[in-house]
Length: 277
Ligand code: NAD
Image (cartoon, rainbow, N blue to C red; front, side, top):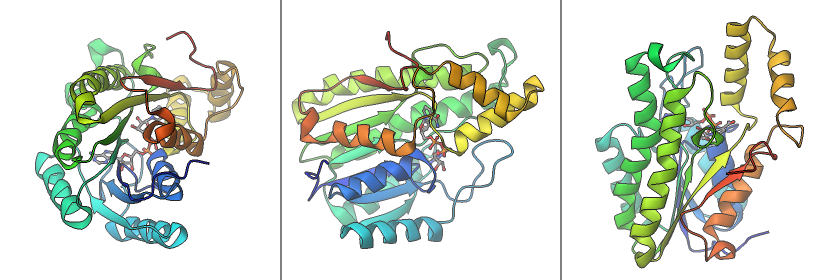
């Protein structure tokens, strides 16, 4: 187990849901010894027919639990990656509380609107989806790189959809493909400053996001959720969905010295669903 993240400070966006990938990443970083900041949207809806996101008290309780369990510093901060003022406030608070930051994981993501072909895609939903998933990574990185004065690592959470065109989910796919290129650009620009930048491309991971997607597909195709899951599993050589903890293990590797010579990569974690690119 990687344990070399002591005296490092890590910020994870979209980390306020206990069942989500972001929280699993924050937890594994804390287990490896890093101080962690859980940043997330507070009390807003990120998809149709889903509950609003957690309250700051709920996220603070998650942070307090990590601090107690792993004997590290942990904080919960409000963040809307689509609002520059919110991102600026986050950077200011992080600097005040922790000083330099060493690890940034851009994990926040959302999908707006309903699945539809590009020529019928609702324009507002298209723009909002790209704003959260792509421009959000730009805003947070722009605000936090100046705090990475001691060097460090950035991991951007892209998706398998960045590399293989999905049907009827164009805005998300285009945004995540943009995240992969943004990762490469930043990796080149920041290598001289001792900052490595990599992306990860998860396949289908068991979170609320995936439950929502199966339910939506079942509704649209007049099928059952179980049918949709079974169809999906046929496309995954390992025959199961991934877990948030497995994704988090990859992130910990990418921010540790074990991956010291890797930058500008977009690593698949898909149970073999994606092998060629
Ligand atoms: P999730 O919906 O459980 O979590 C997403 C998190 O992002 C939530 O905590 C949400 O509050 C936060 N968020 C949304 N909009 C935000 C905003 N404007 N500002 C700040 N935070 C915001 O989803 P998840 O499955 O845990 O996904 C995490 C990341 O992994 C996302 O980027 C997603 O696109 C990506 N991903 C997920 C899967 C999967 O199968 N679950 C596959 C590939 C990629």
